[in-house]
Length: 109
Length: 115
Image (cartoon, rainbow over all chains, first blue to last red; front, top):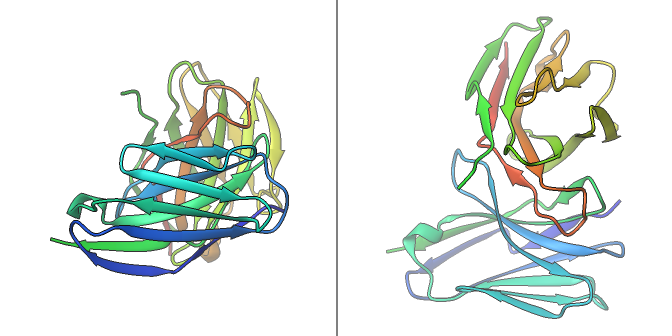
């Protein structure tokens, strides 16, 4: 089954710095999605990149997808304290999403 | 912005009891999902639901579990004869359609604690 795996697991950065996290998966995909989870809250959809796309931007987020390497990266530019959260990549078919273990990002003010 | 709402936020239940977790999906969404997250582990898919029937379920979703859309707004997950290992965060999600490129919108979850 499709499955996302993020790397690294935990990241601590200063406010204003960029944060990059990676995700790899094992099978062919239709798309890859990134979600954010603040402590004690649900998953918030951030961005979806389709398998025929290589890069996508949304505000301070930049996602890349390399289907030949079965990997994706999420870049958060000019980080803010409010970006402190866990970030998950997810792959899936029509109905089910398969999530990775998540990256814990702490942005220090 | 429309939200998926879940109640209760925390449910404590004795082992062996039945529990019902409730969700109100976004009103114009047609596909509904349940996921769970055991502490420290990945978010795992349980079941998807469309047109009043299960469209897909995982190996976790055995006979102990059932889902229902009792009316036009609620979507429930019932766990019968709960076990200690059912303790987890349970997330409900909904999507506008079953298009694989439609994002799923999640509620804040119900923390289920089995004693």
